[in-house]
Image (tube, rainbow, N blue to C red; front, side, top):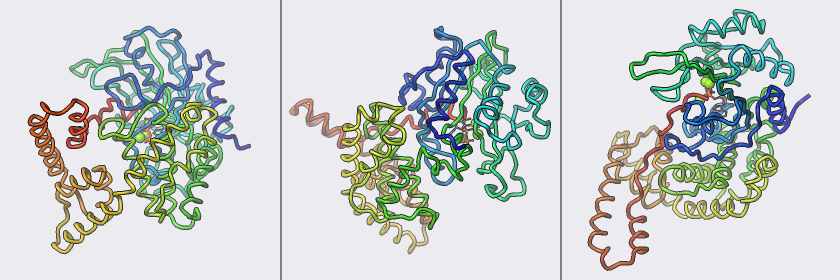
Length: 470
Ligand code: ATP
Ligand code: MG
Ligand code: MG
Ligand code: MG
């Protein structure tokens, strides 16, 4: 029996409703949280309750939460399991149930409700978390050799340097030998796709003070997160998330548009995966009110759209094509997320405007870049000057990261400091110009000019305090 993504989402939410959790609809991708650009995990909308800043209306909750992780942009298509936009299935306890309950429940859900083969499952726990180890071993019956103790990077979670934190326990599914990276060290905890991390259970049980001292919290919390796409891939026996029913209609349409036969050329497959990922993310971002701009969330959106256009070009499609993927995005996931349907025309308009804008300069910009690269190669140099990267950014609309990525394909790095310097000099010129002219110009003309001359500094991209966690 192969359950669909939609069925799995429902199965999860129902299961935790039965355990007394209140089901909430997904919250926005853009969080009410100045430390984060996007909702990166299911716990983000509930942070005030975990931090004790607000009193929750219930002590148990469950969601399928729309998430965006910018730190994974470059993993997309390279690994079987990373997306920019994904759905995180989560359940949360605000001072209510704890390890004793959640570990057996997670096991029950995966093995009994979903029917995963228990012999393929492993658990990880934090180094000294004997409590979790014993629950896995004694209460669940998982053999000791299938429980791994891992360190801080994998198995300790913190919302920031001070505040609530705690060990976590991850559930791993062995996809089999053929997924292994082949290194002798490949085992649970390896970064390749063989030992696939599907679910992270966080035990928020300490408060960390400025000196780094841990004190047990009076009320312990649970925060768990499982990627729906990954769960679907193991349930459906798909070699990667893009071959699950959640992505298949998008992948098929993308292949048709760019005239690629999936499975013939890994490089082309990767480009199609990237386009399929980014179109979904872009549609959801726009539906939640993000517009392509030069900073913050808007810059991420711009980068995703422009990256998709470029991968389309690499596959040989010259005309605008992104909006033609929107109907299949709605078809694959629109019945859960009505905003995609309600905002359909806005999404289409924003996307086509941005695509057209970039299409006009992509060829010229690429030409300029490659001729600069040839000059560098002829001179035996390995770094693209910052002012060239700046012209590409300012005149041709190349996000810096795109320039870096295109250069990297040719073994060239980019002088980022030089880029920042050119940007600052530009801003200074704009300020000087506006001092001279603002007295005679109307406010709107002035703002328009300033916008054009001085792209806002790109900051905040790394504002992710709990990036590496659920
Ligand atoms: P990985 O090690 O694979 O990058 P992670 O440890 O960063 O995952 P967590 O922060 O623990 O992930 O998030 C909880 C769950 O969310 C993961 O176990 C996984 O199922 C899912 N998940 C995390 N990042 C992504 C992503 N970029 N795309 C899809 N699912 C993801
Ligand atoms: Mg991990
Ligand atoms: Mg994890
Ligand atoms: Mg990660």
